[in-house]
Length: 131
Image 1 (spheres, rainbow, N blue to C red):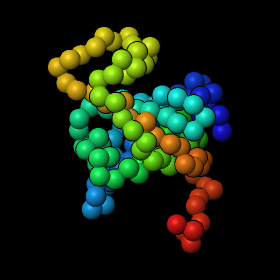
Image 2: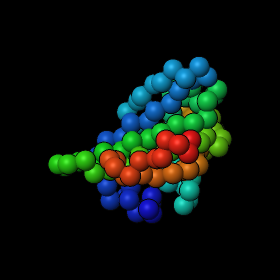
Image 3: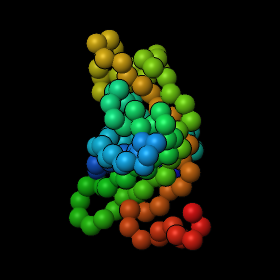
Image 4: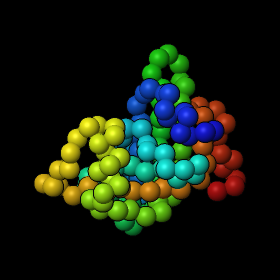
């Protein structure tokens, strides 16, 4: 799947799932990811629970459900690569999508992930014996 092409055209809602060191899961609504290259995406995050979880557990999953009837969308299985705090790249990306200027009142993080696997929203699941 060409992620750049998909997220450029798709409209819908996304949910990012993370877990802390002990496996306690959190879910948060997130906009579409910023596609950096064929296998790397990034999200802009505030310093909240999702970001906190990623400090001790670099695994995450992103579910995107397309608008409209049915269950069309994608599940992305992710591994955190790195992050940048209040970087120029973060604010350049943010201005392109949201038109907003730098807000220095709260730290923001641009968190990069390797996309390890992409599955459809329903069906075509992982083989539980291969985890």
